[in-house]
Image (cartoon, rainbow, N blue to C red):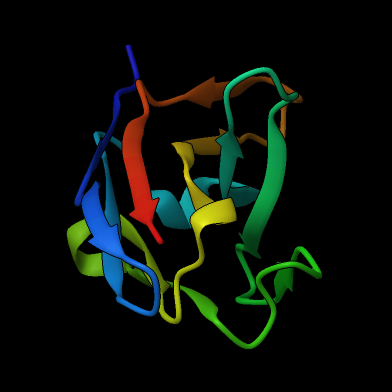
Length: 116
């Protein structure tokens, strides 16, 4: 069973930074798309950033210029560097792997809380 384990969440003041990590139990280079999503209380889960196998990235408009997705293939880890954090970034952040088969896998999530 594939496992995605997120870490790096926590509490930070507005304007601060956090780096989230998603460690995968598989070779992430074999995955079609790796991504970060978030879900705030009472809201639907939304896309934050994705990276394709080829390295192309996509960001939600709300995080462009502040968040950066990256990966370390040797470590099978995907990162989300979050800078200039805002209170509205508060959410549970989830890692997702989309496979070529159409199947997908979610991590358990990590809480990010930004205080004003």
